[in-house]
Length: 122
Ligand SMILES: [Zn+2]
Image 1 (cartoon, rainbow, N blue to C red):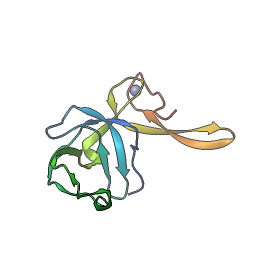
Image 2: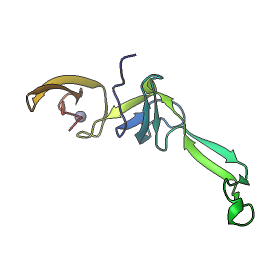
Image 3: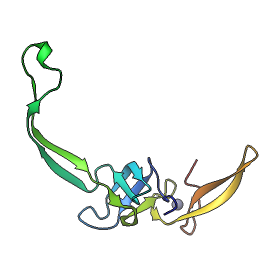
Image 4: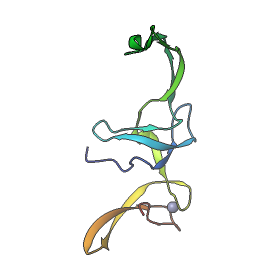
């Protein structure tokens, strides 16, 4: 797979599952796996047990990290999300165009919605 159409910092909308229709920002992109971790989407609840903290003994006594419940977003296949255009605020397919920036040709992503077509990368 040659790269993802979405990257860290993009806002995407979930297309499937319990979080369908919800939006969040990409925290981590995993291009080799074709997955992204999105804040507040596909959150898994993890129960952690209390355990001794490292290097706590020299501070007098063993301190314990509190156990508890942690909500962590789990990576989702990139095909399950759609980029939300920062201009029209709608989920959209991603197109590409090239433009000149300081004498170099760069590829930028554009919104494929009719009537928008704005650049996604600024
Ligand atoms: Zn747009």
